[in-house]
Image: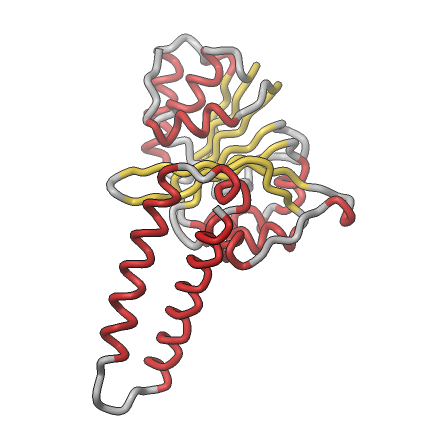
Length: 237
């Protein structure tokens, strides 16, 4: 039995019982193996852009006796996945900008899945905004901490009916609508961390006695906005 990292365990726990799961950026195949071993998925498509990790995933899947239930594909994002081929798509271990590009590039494939589970490690605001504008709805979220960095894991689906879609505030785009409702301990830690960091940078910029360039003034405005979003979240939780 594979022991998943706390990060992948959260992803695993979000995957609903399904026929086929696509594990994009599968690395060594641990998530794929766990989902198959425990009967969460009947079959899996493990995909990675690099041959090395995919070869290791193949070895691990074979060692687990699951070769007949898993297919492996070298794929740039979702390019090698067909529409309606996977009930659940997991995209893990990448920056938010890259995840957004992967979903936008193969929009029809992404929207054909019943569930998407993504684990962005940066650019959360812009990713949530892009997905919201595409018609995706967030149904679950959680936070994980790895190597002293806190980031979200997001579960969502495509909603074709515009009337059933949700509009997210800027604070929700930044910190996550479900995370704000759940108030996990890591959220408070993240708010404290960000507030300390942004305040420190802002104070340093404000203390400059020489003329401030347009770039510095813009950065100060951005930092004040980030601090305002933190205040909004604190007033909610």
